[in-house]
Length: 167
Length: 167
Length: 167
Image (cartoon, rainbow over all chains, first blue to last red; front, side, top):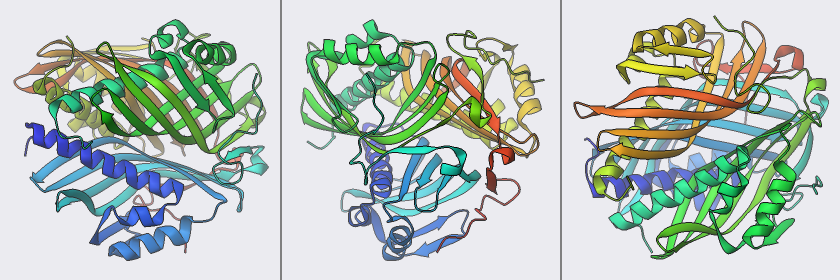
């Protein structure tokens, strides 16, 4: 369906904000809030299907198990939404993603890029994620402190403030 | 207020472009243009409040004092706008941010991520920033030349051209 | 022309998706698909004009010649669209860009930032790129394996999956 109506533009804005809320919950470790964004039977296929899950609970369990440590600082960014409507209540979305992760427990920096392919459905007036998954363009892992890189701010250990001094 | 009208979508576009102009002025060091984007009594709380200012003039003074050197190359990126309307002329916005800064004077690379929480008001038909501020998820600082990293283009010293040669 | 109508918002969404398709084709090396996004007489001025081309074919030839190797992994990201309409069928766009490129053949990481200035035209109901070009804020090149950085996923050589193991 071509995007040619006000209702579709309004739905598009809701779908964009849905995805943005998902990433905010991911990087701020808000697992309970994140669960509200999925359908109960949602599916996920992360890392080109290497990590595949069926059901909202299994998805949240996977993410919260692997990303809850305060020493794991993640910045996931979603770019370039190409959303198409299948019907008034169903849409697909392709997004470019990048992640930049700084792990002070295991002393590494991970950076990568890829593309998401999602499916969204509208249930009781609210847009939800029915499927999400990505395939990586690339991923690199490198040294943190051994590379001479110092962590000067953390949401969790410095209350989000930089410890560097400027004028 | 739910986003459910054409007028709100038009306002949303203006608010997005306001934020984008702010970041463009920041990274291109256009301080006079940037001043046009704030209300006179705007407030700022950068770095989780560590750098807090009251009044447009104080905000511009802080930014221009710290970021005007040609050797300080910054790339600030604003992602994932979750804008909500408080009224027809007032809105709030949450944004994910990332910054990547290359300082050729002090020979370092600074990279970071965080979340902005802004407030916007419409004055005489124009949307302006009434409050802005961010809290960092993380920030890292690392070596530039000592890390084997060469700067091969600069807006200021190479006229924006890469000095690398491709085919 | 101020953006003040539903038709303009619909055109804006199409222009955004046009740019996003361009970048997706770039990073996924889809040159034939990319050619569909330009007018036949499109012009390009990459790297502040250092690499300038006239005609869709010359642009695609330049990009495909330089970016087709599987060992060249690129992530180009377009941010902060400030699109303005010149007429109902012509628009300009300023975008912030960042690129992060990992080259496993020549063993380097290139990262950079800059600003695009584009022109778009609507032809037979479809928006196309009539001109594109960017000027860099900065560009850096650094070591990959010599910097202790390992590539752990590739669209081409690991089928988009990470080779790292998580729980």
